[in-house]
Image 1 (cartoon, rainbow, N blue to C red):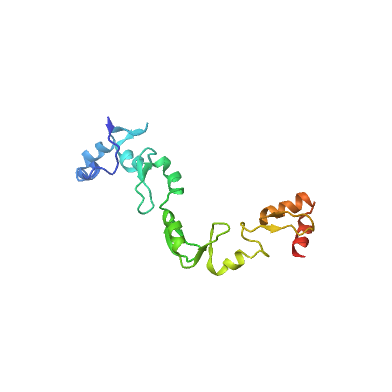
Image 2: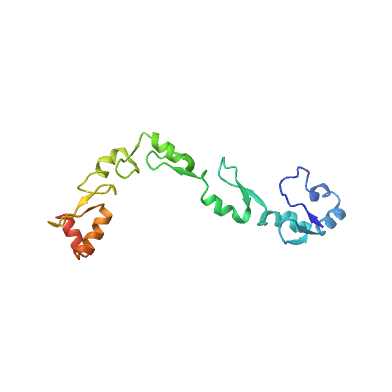
Length: 181
């Protein structure tokens, strides 16, 4: 006979507890053969109530992240939780904990960070000058000029390194010397 496997829905005491005082009844109830209505598992009632209900991959599980209303099969919960918008993260600028779905709104108001007008990414306010310094070129939104005369190439620090290697045949060692000169 199939047992309704909506685990956790019934508010009645488990059958094994109700008949625990009667050893004969308790022993026989535990050995009744049952089938899970959610998957292909079958076995005795004791294994169903004590083991299978805690491991059935078809049971609906609530996401572990606070405030997340999502429920899905146990077999899918890991995928959901790894991309859940209610996951707790820390602001890299002020170090407070908040839900991932609140991070962008927080960063727009965080006293410790500021949106870079060039690369459109949040940066620590106190390092913004260094971030946007054209001599250092750490911001991907800054266009830097090739140091070779008459070349005229301009690009971000990432594309400029590639430019030196492909257009001027510079290896890493020569590239460092050229950039540092």
